[in-house]
Length: 420
Image (cartoon, rainbow, N blue to C red; front, top):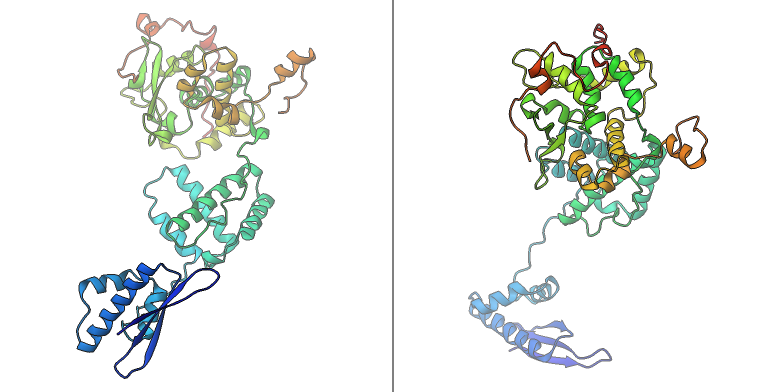
């Protein structure tokens, strides 16, 4: 029979059960600091185990359930008393960074090309610094600090910030899989993703000079759509169809592949702005028979951005600005805000919140310094869906009549050979 004993101490009473085997050998199962009711239950269960073992039977269901709920430490004490078989210890698996990242990327599913490229870059960098065979448990907060310094030595702060956030995401997934207890990147300041030095305002005069140097209508729209309507390049420009253009109401529908996975997103309706209309009408008038897409070149030609930069520098004789198409879109957003267009309308047309636009698109213009000082700045200052295939009304009246949206619009596009 099992007996219950208690010991009193400064931190309270502790209990132990003394069990005797057939040969009279005594075994002590220490229960620790528990209340007397729990200790008495443990004594009864241990007695049941003694009886079952003496009779050569399995313990009853209630006793077996109790044993199953025990922690590993108490269970091991029962096993040393030969009342229960020892538990099998799971094989200790060492998880490396390379193994975890391979599993993480296998669960991501289909990604947009740019997202996939950014993920691949972040994976390559973290594996380059730590090594694929580095165990996850060995990566400490100090190692995360060293990784941040390493990135800042190689890249601009904004770029390093993106890669640090990806690293935090990778290790957070390891915590969620219970491979490591804490994320070493949790408390690491990743820094800002803003880079004001790369924000550049492209004036209407500059973009018209570039457009005039373009070899054909498609190239003109490649520059005009981002600059005058804030269309993302290349994804939204590539998906734009003539059926999306409603000439009667002067608006067109843009399909948004970048944000289509967000609830309520996927398309937005944008006005045919006055500055955009002559370029869009001219392209419509000169389109090929049966043309579906407004700018099919973007769908079939690779390295469009490289050719676009060549047009800017070589043909238009304009110094290339950073982030060629992003800054065209940002300049459109900046113009709309300065014209006093309501913020809600700008958000709907550009497809970004005011906070994001001001953070990544807007800059201090030379005109702002001139307005504040009265002195001209000599250098750039620091820093509902539409469907249907309608025709523009002016074209319906007469295809021979010059478009009246911009004076001398017909004369600003001299025929030029392609630069491709």
